[in-house]
Image (cartoon, rainbow, N blue to C red):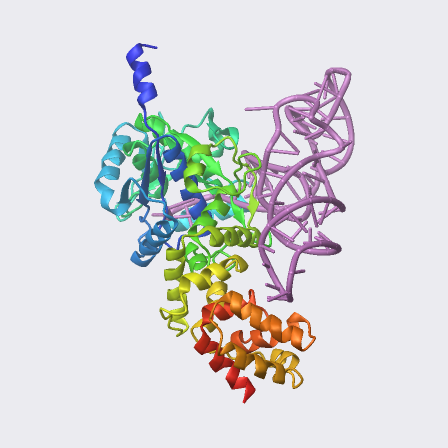
Length: 475
RNA sequence: GUCCCCAUCGUCUAGAGGCCUAGGACACCUCCCUUUCACGGAGGCGACCGGGGUUCGAAUCCCCGUGGGGACGCCA
């Protein structure tokens, strides 16, 4: 190797891409693929490219494009280039289509859809793998059928008939597929528009993609694409095929079964940090490390430690991570998120009680933003008390004690310590156990019998509000 | 049907022939902390799909089986 070739070699920057088709939202599987592609580029100081594969005009929608972009933004997976849209790159595909036609690597096929369908069915019934029969494939000395003037031909790739296509998959290892298993795939439709396998190859080539990191379901497309690269005279990128993510129940995720948009996790109260961390650990590992941020992840990430087998999604573990990130989240960010969630339930957050204090008191008890919002709503809105708790705790025998406490409370300095002392005094005076007094207070103030330390709750709620709420029960 | 891929606790995984009487995490159970509920802390339960090889030695390598998944579109 010449020294400058070597230089060029080591200077080759990593370029990865995420190439969703905008036929729906960004789901959890796509998000993980994007995350791994992104992390790989970051790890190697390369570029991460976003490409929208929208050549299926029938199913692609602008809403889906937006949904994918939103999902990426929420997760913080920023692209360095793009988004590129395949529909805007038609001239590139057409140019290379012509090249292939001219070089004899591609040819026109006039077989009709009906004809092809019949062929497929016949082959399936005979227990064969359905494949194009090569009717219009030009061969030396072969006489092609008469061209039908009224049929718009498709363009097929003339796939090699012999030999094997082999590659070293960066996740799955060596994979080898015989060319006899492949057929002459259609690379342009009757209307002249190019198809997926062809666009991908042209794009990956022209965009200089060095590592194609994508879903498992593309393994079977890879040999076809490699053949296409070779016919085009292009360098073949490296491939890494990620196994799929199964639902919580071990079933395959699909539109009607469990596949939800990453944005739904946002709606359901998950922090993007939690989703990211969870996804990173799903199918990839770094020893015993469980909790890490994306900076750390990008330093650690490699393709060697990706499991080749499918992974089942586990909401419980996501919840655990979410709880963790709730505890460490920036309070200001948390406050604005919770304020928004409360607003959706028509609860207006006021300056007092201080949202910051409330969150500090509550955030380590919740594992979800919606739950957290629901838990603290009573600070800004008189709660509807749980009837069973009222009956159980606000009993007639304790009411006189509360009545007396109420009087004391109205006189003291409003700090958690003073409040605690007041309650303690009442407890001692009446020879009761602490909960006997604390529980009814919880019910009167929070509406339920569970809360953090009651004196702290009262301190934050404010004297006036505590008095008012107690009063409602002691009339 | 044909081809391709996969296989460690319930789940996510560690494991690159001896460090493995298989480690960690979630979940579960017990106890501790405690002013209720949580949080937290300490323990516990729990797995190498089966069968053959190779080897002094296999969760790790090879073969067969079984099970699961994927692909076979003028979809991507």
